[in-house]
Image 1 (cartoon, helix red, strand yellow):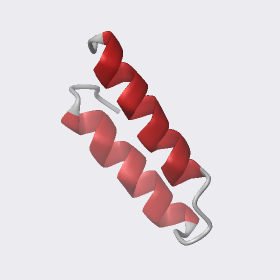
Image 2 (tube, helix red, strand yellow):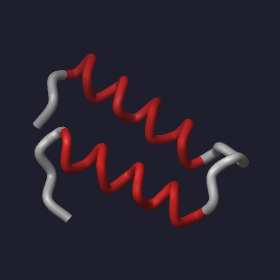
Image 3 (cartoon, one colour):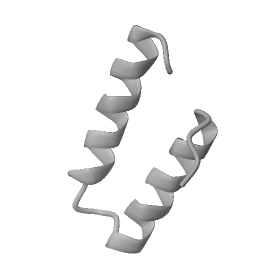
Image 4 (cartoon, one colour):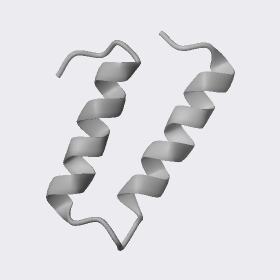
Length: 43
């Protein structure tokens, strides 16, 4: 589990990626997978 501040930052980043019109769905999924793995979550 992430500390509170990191959790908020991760949520904001995740939301920004999801709402970004520049990335296609595959790139969006890859960013979410990479960030989840970076913080220690497994798919």
